[in-house]
Length: 115
Image (tube, rainbow, N blue to C red; front, side, top):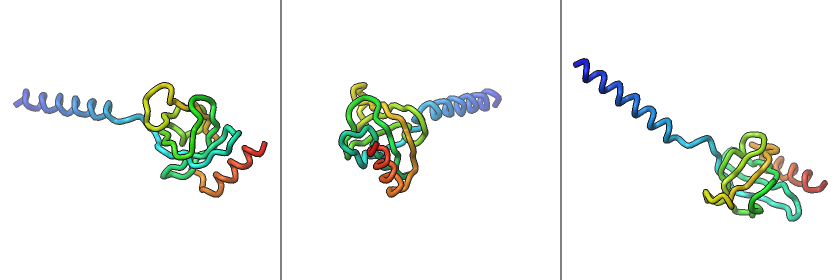
C-alpha cells in the first residue's frame, strides 16, 4: 500500500515536470501588415492589435510575412520569420509600441517614417 502511494506521487511529479518542459516559451504570432519603403519601421498585426517595430537586422520584413516571438513586450528582440528556425531568418527588432489600434498604429508609423 505504501509502495503504491509512493509510485503514484513519483508518477505525478514526473508528469508535471514533463508537462512544464513541453510548454513553449511566451511567443506571439503575427503578420507584417504595413511597411513603408526606405523606412526601418513596420507594423505587425496580431490578435491583440498592432505592434510598431523597428528593423535592426536580418531579412527585410515583407508585407504578409509571418513573425513569431516577443513583439508584445518593449525592447530588443529576435523574431522568427515565416516560422523558419534557420538563423538566416531571424529578424532583430526594437519594439516601439504594441497592442495599438489600427488607426493609432498607422499614425505612429507615418510619424516615424516622416523623419
